[in-house]
Image (cartoon, rainbow, N blue to C red; front, side, top):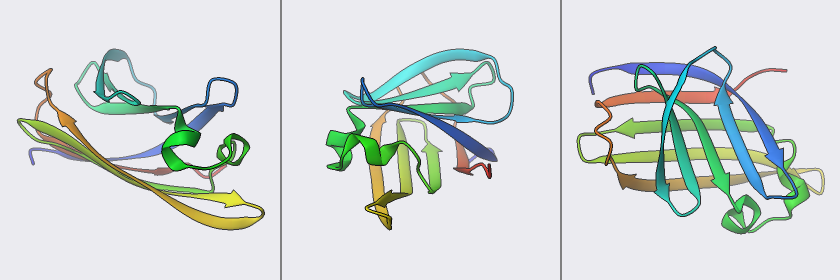
Length: 127
């Protein structure tokens, strides 16, 4: 990989639309989005660095109640961008009935917009 970056992330969850949006805490200028599959969209800044991830139909993807996604306790995510594909591996921790519950996301999509090879690590910002 050409570069490796590390970021803290915040999140917003829209219960009505079942959309989980995670974004870096640093300021950035949005450039473009790439849909990795029908429910996962990755945003990039003007420097072609991944800066935000949106998961549509999140409760269905993780097979949990919508209201449990409002306050994720933990997040550890790697985004690996190669010449041909982009892979996201994420581990989440949420509270389900006051019990920490792990969730994971492992998805790969085509690098159809020619983002340069890089690796980025994201974790949850401390409130």
